[in-house]
Image (tube, rainbow, N blue to C red; front, side):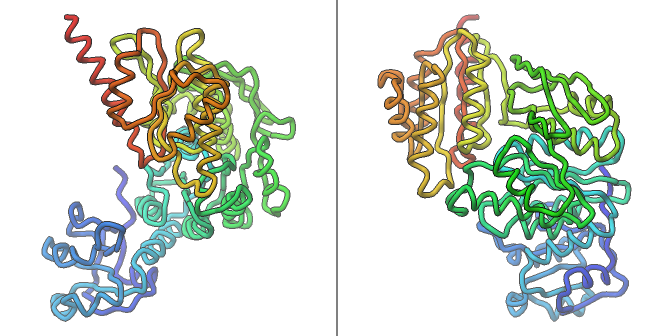
Length: 477
């Protein structure tokens, strides 16, 4: 693992612009941590107040572990033994908001690391595009990338604080559900390149309308460095609205003729998607190790970064073909009883749900297809209509059976029934209700798509279907 760039006491104070309550002599820190459970004695502790835990409660524990510095919220100073820390020569910096201070540290670190930063946002495909982009760029450059879902005002700084002197590029993901969030994240990451994968009906609860989503995603373009480039989806009209109104340099990807980075001859297979990648000066055949026609757009966005970074077509091809699907995102496998699962359980919104259903229809061929759908959350007043549309799409796609769970399960069912799906082919209920019914109905050759928003815990259904298949196999031995 690359060692993060170390910090002097003076750099910590300069980056946070905080009030120094106590300080030591020539203090030196190996990195920044917000977790007292894993912090090393050489790191500085930032006491974050989150939804569940307040880091200030663990400040004294961190000091007892040997930590020589910490950053706290100013109003918490009276509750903590700052006088004792002063006598012990411990650095204690008080700030108005430790989450903002974490962002200030990350922004300072991003600047002194002198890397090129790619920031990615979009209603769908952010994580997959981030993974593909990192694989492409790392063909030639030492690259840091977001891990897991560290894409918010805490996660993004933690990623940038991992930068080392050996890194040349960083590929980060920017998430949001309210206006202004991407603006803040862009201010921290200072992207040289910004990617908007697409704009669709996601997080409507906090953004109200598709135009609200567009404006929020557009904050990334505004945050790109003046000499930077926006990589935008030429096939998405809302994204193109942003392209037309920016003065920043724009590179378009997609299937449209006006795109500089294009694809043709797309073929979706069970465990791969092949296409021809067309770059301005080169053309190359690519075999993505993931299924789904919609994955090609993510690959084109990643290829666009490779092109701007000066990589050859063969280097871009190698990076794309070395990428792997993220856990819970279009993971396809066949159980021991011959049933194929499409595990897309990590998250869901109307756009990604539609893409996944279309992929199920493509891959199942003449076999029976099943959708196990959890609620799509954060859609606010649009929830009923959006769930009904997904039900309608199920009926139109020829899915044999629909299982749906959550507050809006009835709306999804109504949409399917209203478009011709038999009531007898629809089951609504809890996870256990669904598992009890489906395990008595499934047979070898069937295809099952499992998808829902993160909070719906749909990965538990995938796990239980695996366990059921293994028990079935054991009984036959």
